[in-house]
Length: 181
Image (cartoon, rainbow, N blue to C red; front, side):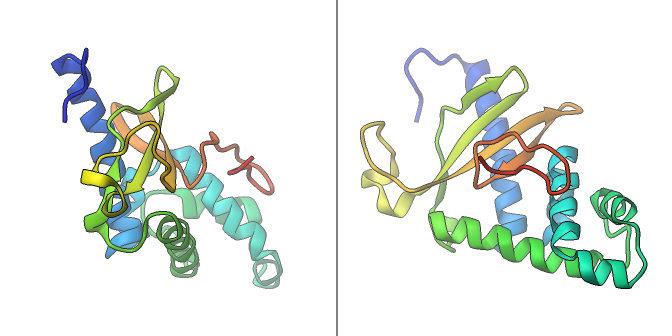
């Protein structure tokens, strides 16, 4: 559906953001896994997810004599760069699925992304993912109540990548990282 006043270049730009978000959702929360979705994740979210997992598993990681910073950095890299990757992936995918499924259900056929992202800054946009099966005509109207899953997207190295899921906050690395208000 075309918005009034939207030219073709604006429409294509919005489609690129939504397409990247949809690919991530299908990989991480759909039938894929984190490894397949990892290239679609912004480096800031990568390190925040790794720090979150390391922080939650401080005891076992300490007993294994690993350095927290080194583990987080290795997990945040492209692919399974650490022997703890499979544990990290399992927990992270479970948490992502819980966030997505609680908001929009577990059927990817019903996941729809609003056509007009909100601008956070020039390279960062906020999208809302809806369960379109619960919307009249599968279209969200601005005065209609709908449970959504927010997704923050950022243009990184010329590609739209996921900066946060389930929150409209731009995440901040740290111990623990800040992913929500």
